[in-house]
Length: 529
Image (cartoon, rainbow, N blue to C red; front, side, top):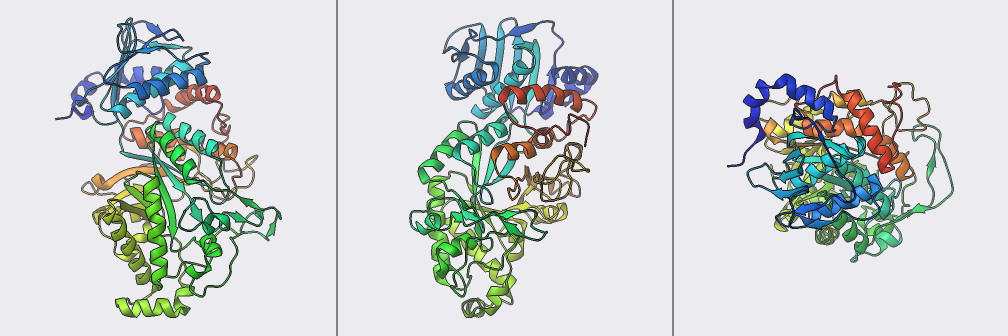
């Protein structure tokens, strides 16, 4: 039976004041489950410190060595071997929970024991953060840690504005350093199709470039820049990114939007639409009436062929099918859709979308995968095997959990990092709207309104980064950081946050961001939120 840290409750309660004080002194983000720093002294790590690898834990050790070169300025990789007594020793123990770890620091060095390979990696991430912000030293003591949620995600939209492979890898680095384990990669939308599909080369030949981009806010009078914008990832590049993420214990969940948000696909393949008319890759933001025809068998053949290639590229059990914001105007006018509704005994167009979603669900289930979709998929009668991404509010997440669905909580507005960060908006540039600051995210309770019986179905939390107004990775990072630190506290340490310590911890983490060379917004640190 796995040794869960909840069994330490009696010990933690008996030394609560000491543990709390120690945790504050450690200043690690996200907050560890248990910290004891009563022993005096520090262990110094240098380029000459040996990494002792047990149980073939070479992969996380190698990533740590690479990270230390980048953040500590080591000129060469740290020496690694299977034998030795003094240094950084890493191994696994199945008695520790998955993704959990224990770290013991003494004059002999640092011992990190993970419940699995990912646990070793997260223990080393904690160690790296301490070393970078504490001048290469780590205090003697003991840390025991494990995450609150098994799905800890961040979303990245590369459709509105394309991000290069190197940009996506840097995004993954940021997620991994905050102990996130899912990247929700939004790969198709009205404004661009970003994934190579060999069965339909037109999708990237035609659908990956829009002729121009909107200038100004989408709700204001419109004008455009007159410059083509595009880009896509070859399947070779996608395999490279998936491998890079896996080496950092991040699973990529790909999203292929259907049946709405598909105008780029309709531009490339007009026969996918109800009336098969020519449409451009969209140059607007928001919701277009142009959607996939749900009444033609050719649409389902297309979707299945696309998904066959997607599941070959992405090992994730969950495949995101979108399912959100699908207008039904074209379907009401379409003879094919109306015929399908009659043939299937469907009462209305909402039921037709449900038919499409459940049909795709059955297809993916037959391939050994499961669907995840925005919470609109609940409207179509999907089975409890589908995972719901609750974005339109916590009540929808509660409803899905009560009805047996696994749920990822990502509700508006708290999880939307494309929103402004300050109330005044001064100096922030153009953003989509709203105002979500660090403190609001840090204090958010994802279990609010969820019954005790349904809480087991809340498998995770995710923040979303939509890129209508974010033209490059630097702007994305400025929206993500430092708010991701608040979000990772919710994801990893939901029941052990302490508002009295977070600002001191964040000043420490700021040094870490600087060492990594990541762009971050100044507003929280300047007290302007």
